[in-house]
Each structure stands twice: as structure tokens, then as C-alpha cells.
Image 1: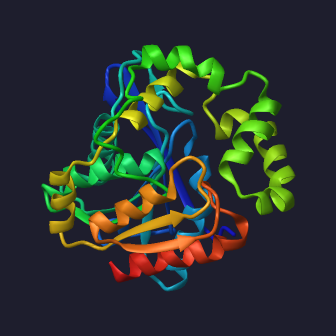
Image 2 (image 1 turned 120 degrees about the horizontal axis):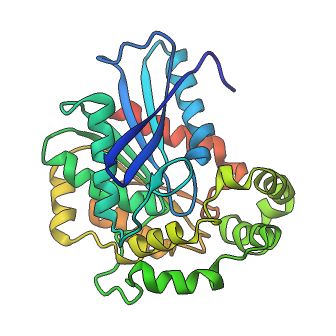
Amino acid sequence: MMNDIQITSNTCVISPEVELYYEIRSSPNVSSEHSLKMIMVMGAFATMRHFEEQANYLVNHFSSLQKSIEILTYDHRGIGKSTCTRPERQTSRMLANDAYLLINEVWGKNSSVHVFGASLGGMVAQELALLLVSERRLRSLYLVATSRGTYIRPLAFGPGVWSKLMPFLIKKDREHMIRNVLLPAAFSPETLATRGETYATLWLNEYDQWWAFDNQQACACQASAAASHYLSNEGVQIIRDANIPITVQISTRDKLIPPKKQHELARILKAQSVVFDQGHMGDDHVKEQIYRSMINHFENA
């Protein structure tokens, strides 16, 4: 559902080599000065298209309550409509700095924001939280299907090694990639049985709008960032001491981020945890519950 949602788009120059494409969703005639501001940080290999439904739902909800909200979504460097002309080793802190500069460009250097991140985006969100906490600008943190990483990181290769691994992980046959790799990794068997064909058709028809797999170099850089992420004990303490609402959304049948690691993140951050019996990307039968969880989080914040 979209009820008079205003969508503005633009690009933000991060460096001579990097330019981020972004969109802002809000109610018409929103007063930016008084609106709730939220940035949504996407996971690996995917475009911000995956956030459209959630963002639209939240804008409509807050608009129905006569409350104003602005939701900022964007593509990571080298992904989707964002560019990166010099591939290099990426880290979650590097990608968090991209988001930090984007926030400053869009809303100003004194703006306070809510941060939402999923999967790799949740790792980036942890690092972004550290940047914002130091300036007392973090309003709340919502983390989905993610982890703090591990102290020992055996797969923390540079993009050069990951580039050699990509042909084994990413199949050039798009139909094979969608049906035999993506769908089983993203959803529970129940959702695959009822909605698998719908997602397969959508993603095959609009492959480049949803996924970045045709750019294996960009994917290798993101794999490097995910594999090298680790939120230190010091970082954990800084986020906890910020005394802001934190929610960790846990998927019990996640095949990409172990549920045990998701529970660990909620425990060490002393976060409110919401647990759903679903796969990594979220199953349709709990979608309304997930949206309600997000709304409760932001209303509490």
C-alpha cells in the first residue's frame, strides 16, 4: 500500500571514486526539522529495492497517526545504482563511514537518527552506531538477522581471494542462481512451497534491480567486509552505555547467519529480542508481526 508517499532521489559523492545513490521516503509536506529520521542499511549483494515494502509500510503507518517520518535507503558502493570505480578491500567500518557521510549530506551534521540494518547491513549498522554515539546522535538501533562477527576470522580474505571464490558461489545461470541458491538460502521450506514461484518470477524478471551478482568484483568486496567484521567488547560497551533502545530481530531457521550468533548479539547488547520462526530474509506469514515489531521499537524510542 502506498498512500501519497513522497519519494525523492539523488546521489551523494563520498570520494572521487565512490558515489552513492539514495532515496528518501516521507509523507507529503513533511517538516524535516521535526520528523523522525531513519536510515536503513541493506545486506550483502542486494539493492535497496528489498527495503521498499517495509519503508512504505512505516511511512503510511506514521502518516496515519499524523506523525512525520523520513526513511533513507541507499545502495552500497558498487552495488545497484551506486558506483565505485576503484575496488578495494572493504570493511564494515568503511561502509559505515559511507552511511555516516550520507546522513550528514542529507540531514546535516547535527541530525539525530534511528539506524536499521539487516544481515551485512546489521554489521555496518553496529559500526555506524559507534560513529553516531560519539556525537550523541543515535536515537535507536534495530538489527535484523546479523551478528557481532567472531574474534578469530578465518575467512577474512581480501577481495582478490574472494574474487577467485565468486565463480563457485555465484552462478552465471540466473535461473539456477535464483532457484537453487538464493531461494533455499533465504526462506523456509514452507514459504518456498507457497511463495517460491512468486519470488523466482519477480527476481528473474528484474534481476539487476534486486541483486548485484552480475558485478562479481563488488560482491567480492562485500564478502570481504562481512567476513572481517567483529564488534569488540569495547564497542559493545559503548553502544550499551548510550542508553538507547536496541532491538535484535532473530530468525530461528536462518541458514546464513547462525541463530546462535544472533542470540549472542542480543545478549551482549542487552537488547530487546524478537524471535521469528523464519529464514534469513523473512517469511511472508510473519511479515505483519515483523512490521509491528519495528513500529513498537520506534514508538518506544
